[in-house]
Image 1: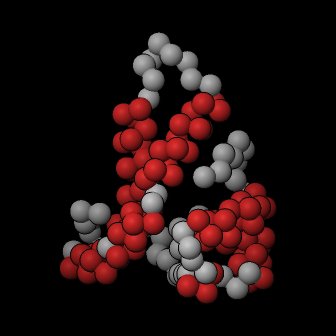
Image 2 (image 1 turned 90 degrees about the vertical axis):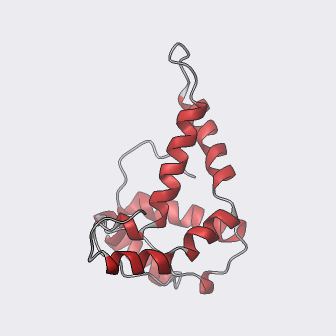
Length: 142
C-alpha cells in the first residue's frame, strides 16, 4: 500500500509501479511471467510513462471494459477494507494523525490481502463473467 499525498498523474503512477510491483510479486510468491496485470480505464493508466514502463518490464496487460466494477475483484477488497476500517475507527472525540491513520489502514490491508484471499478473488472471475453475461451487463451480486 502506498500513501500518495498528491493527485496521481502518469509519472507518479509509474513511480508507484516501479517501487511496488516487484515487491508485491515477491510478497505473493509470484513471477511477472505468471501475471496478467489488470487496471481500470483511468486515463493515467494509459499515459505515456506507464505504457512505456509496462513494455520495458514485459508486463502483460488485460484489456478491460470501462465501468465494470462487477468484473473487478479489487472492488470487493476495497469494500471489505472500508468495512474493517469503519470497525476500527477511533471514536469521533479522538483526532487521528495522518500517519496513524495510514498505519492502521495499512495493517488492515495486509491482514486482509492474504494470498488465500487474493486467490479466492481470482478464482471468482469465471463466475463473475458468467453472471455478467447471464444478466446481459446488468448489476450482479459482485
